[in-house]
Amino acid sequence: MNKRIAMLVVIVVLVSAIVAGCASTPAPVTLSQLPVYSGATRATSAAVEIGNQMANGVSKLSVNGASVKSVEHQEFLLPADAKADQVIGFFNTELAKDQWTSDPQLAGSDGPWTYKVWTRGSQAACVYHVVNNASGIFGSNVLVVVMLVTLAK
Image 1 (cartoon, rainbow, N blue to C red):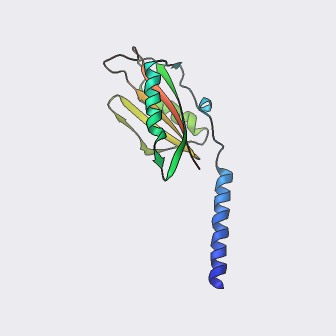
Image 2: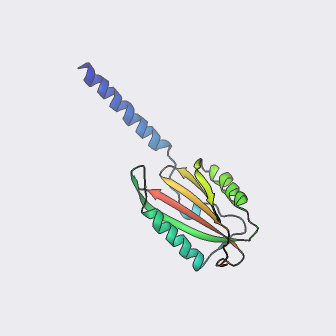
Image 3: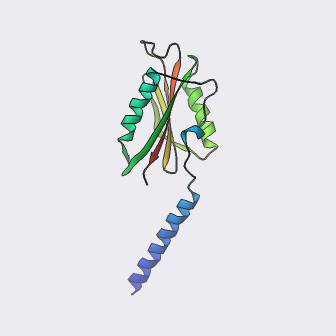
């Protein structure tokens, strides 16, 4: 009998914790609610195709057993002098205002790519800063891909 009562108490505590956690989880956002870097212009053609390919790859991922529900993305062009640390710093400041948090393990760079991921509830905001390569497909600009990933509950 005592084991049943103890188990019932554990279940009540767990359910209370889950309900409390849900109550404090911020409401999901849409891509249009994410900040846009000053001076950014919407990209077209080749840059959008890069975003499409990235989103397609992300949509097939699983995170801690949860599948990806949706991936939205926008591509922006910035002047060539827009440095990765400036862009990432802007998003650090702006996203923190809306309770987004980041983990240093979800940031880095690889060649022309610099990226960082912020999370909030069941969503992740991913920002990729891409320096133009030798082919010049972005003209003399820097490409920034902003992606919003929502996980299935």
